[in-house]
Length: 380
Image 1 (cartoon, rainbow, N blue to C red):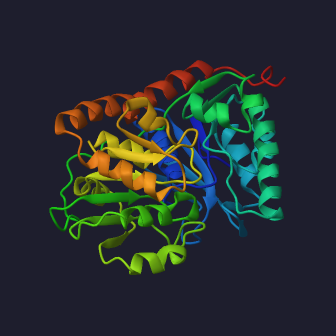
Image 2: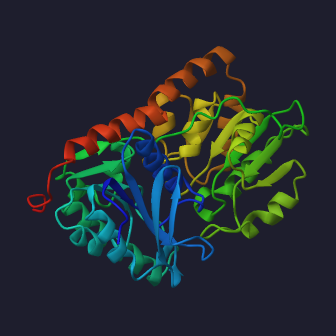
């Protein structure tokens, strides 16, 4: 049972210390609202058995449900909906992070508590019958949750309109709110080796991120002083694997694998690169992309709904087709030559649009509008 009453419960099957844009967004919202005086709980899965079932971090009470097994990127935690429902019923608002296979069970267990559903992305799973079946089941659960939600959030209109769930989202109270992105300025260029062009990638090293296409694009740059810095965890994230591109990396001595970076190390990474690249083949919003631009780094990404939004909204970079190393290399080379004053101007615009404060302001308005309401008339 929950320890006390809460203003906000955030339900997310992944949470810190699991590393992804999803978990960074969840943590920034939870701790940000706690810093604004809200009593906040997070209900998540115990994805690491060493983590305590009950914890308090950053002013947020964390409840973890034991995990029996993994299925793709989801955790199978049978008691998760029950635990989340119990904590939600002691709260004024439930913030539900989708996709979540348990969502269809969880929302009814929250009873009359108003629900805000945040759609992070449509699930992108490996080809095959099991992947298709899981995606369909996830979509069914998300549709059921959205129909019972008082409000629905996505990172942008671009992402929401392209989602498989848009037909049901469009009939709800929909609000686009960009995820809270951290100001990473002030780092030291500790990863910089030469005076040549330094291209950077930071994120989960999984197939969805298109690392192989970035390596091939970089190999088209002939400068021996150029460097490609690849940072991110590939040991402890679902689907993490460098094997597919390791042979290509090994053929180019200019490529550096930095591993997982945290805290000030991330600031130092951004201070070390000239151009940031997010060559994703499946992504909805790149928090790392927005943070690179906020740090003054022009960025290139792929033309995917939602994923392209940070660059398209600010003009601070280039958008290229997915899986196109030639276009990626051309964009990187163009961005390496842009003037300093242009980068400074665009960085200010990125900070104004994607800052933690701007995102939390929008969330606080939305959450506050629902406090004191009940969910009795939301479902139709």
